[in-house]
Image (cartoon, rainbow, N blue to C red; front, side):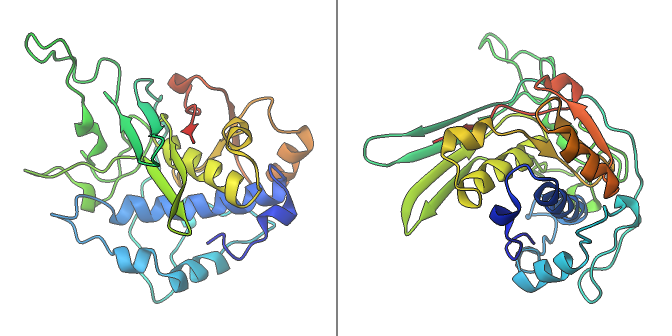
Length: 269
């Protein structure tokens, strides 16, 4: 969706670039909610989701001067059938997820994200082994249209079922360039993991930051529902915030405290 926008020309952290990126996030998370789940049990339309023509159609629905309303968002004609949506309030975010990125001298790379998913996970100890079991069951759509602890709306494709794997926001990422290792990325932060990794990746690729600059850059996040954008407090200029609000973006200021729905500290090489 973002490929044909010249983000670099608009400038990193500019209201214009942030607005376009927020709108792309909004649409990507809508698709995630409706279609993604354990592919052994749900027919995930991967080919269409990653088709550039589909992305082009989505991009045409983005108004560069005005925010979309998530509840009113409809997919481009001729793509997927629209599903009814229920908007709910966000729940607080947990703090237990850990990511690490490792590269050895030979260029072998590992990206690992691991989590308990909430405070003390399932609150069950694994016998005398000394570790807690996670509560990844919350990553399922326990009830379609009702948000989980992160405020995420999940679709029927991710409904609870025997032998099924829950959909996760964990996004350990390895990027190659010219068939060589280029980046190893990941983050904690519940659903903000996805946009944190995307923000860091765009920082390096589109804005030509080095990896530390990209990791240190201000964060913003939109997950379709609830229909608002979380941004780090005191890290964007008042003019940028005002211009985004004039475009109709609903903003929620936050910080690095994940309990209050903010941003993981990304790891990358």
